[in-house]
Amino acid sequence: MWDGWMDFAIATLVGIAVGIVVAVVATIVLAIVARRRRWAGVLSRQSRAPFRMLLLVVALWAAVRAAFPDDTWRGILDQLLTILIIAASAWLLASLVVVATDVALGRYRIDVPDNRVARRIRTQTLVVRRLAIAIIVIMGIGAVLLTFDAVRAIGASVLASAGIASIVAGLAAQSVLANVFAGLQIVFSDALRVDDVVVADGEWGRVGEITLSYVVLDLWDDRRLVLPCTYFTTTPFENWTRRGSELLGAVEMDLDWNVSPDRMREHLHDVVGATELWDGRTAVLQVTDAVAGYVRVRILVTAKDAPTLFDLRCLVREAMVTWVQRTLPDAVPVQRVRMTDTAGAAPADDPAARPHDGLFTGSVEAERRASTFTNAIQTVRESDAER
Image (spheres, rainbow, N blue to C red):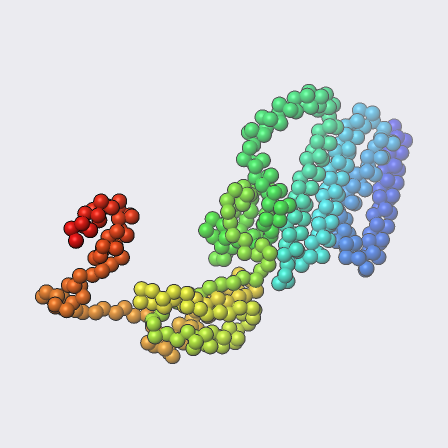
């Protein structure tokens, strides 16, 4: 009796000692490699705990199988340790996925001006990481359940009814599956990326997170807008950084006819030339309309990204308003009212009192022209006969 327990203790100590040796060797090797390779340091930090846990559980499992003296408890401990081995293995695999994705993300920075490719890779990598971890967890749970004889016995019937069950589950979770497939479509079609500036549901913001079921927008006023993935596959939205972050913005002003576009244009170049918000590509001032007593002046400026463009537009608008008030006060918009005396009859030489020859009235030719639109040909002919 005691000899059996002594053998089990010796086997346990030997297994633990072997596990410690393997863990130390692996740590030393990774520390040496980490001096030249970044991924080795990330691997050591992320996978140290699950790797050591797996070594410990495997050592105990081997000792139980080799020298545990009690046959009654051996089966129970063997199954328990097998479940722990499966859990530790799943933990280790998940940590390896995190290490691989972290190394991939470290090669592409998104804190640089031209980061379109980096944002696309980051978005796809994060979604693939979540999907891979979810698959590992599901497989681990399935492997744990298969360690029970009752579950293995009903496995055949479950597989036989898998077709009907999948149809029922698909109908019951139609909206959930639609969001999942929409999330995959968004990520791998490159239609939307993390850190993209978009206008969705009437709100302007930056994409903060993309999952398989929803997208989180970080709005300009620090709010968070959560939209389902199906929104971005079924509803049009604006993506301001689809191909690049550079944008063109407009500033419109309604001014009086006394305004001088040339002088405004000169002052515009002075304003944009004195600020770092302008990227130097475009600074244009044009008169786009001149009706209803106003002259509409439109200013087009460019900036490196959407937040900078917003600040630049506000700066240009404020500078031009201040300049107009100080330099061209006559150009400030005003409304004119003309007071006239309408009493009495119109004078004899009033043009309104004289017969007027128009395009369709006042002459035979005009009335004939009008007849082509009014089908009054017979009336025109009678008028010709009388004359």
